[in-house]
Figure (cartoon, helix red, strand yellow):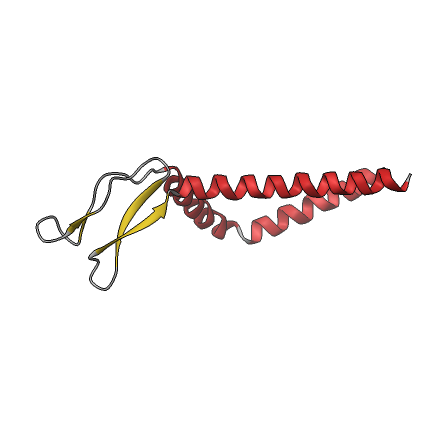
Length: 113
């Protein structure tokens, strides 16, 4: 009975907190939706920096990277990784670090016994 009451109080508290920030949720949702759309989009195609007739042609892009115009007058081609590639790399690094920490923790606990 006490557990159910505590769970009910926790649910009410969380609901109240989310009701207070309800307007910000829709803005946050739209921002997150745009970020996911940006991350899922692959930038591609050969670019000319700054313009086609007088500019420099950047090398062609791939599924892992693309080139963007940069420099003082946007006359240079700068290498950039695709957004999805950066996210996947970060997720893999975090996953490997978590696995390493868990294995180290497991090793230390077995060594004590």
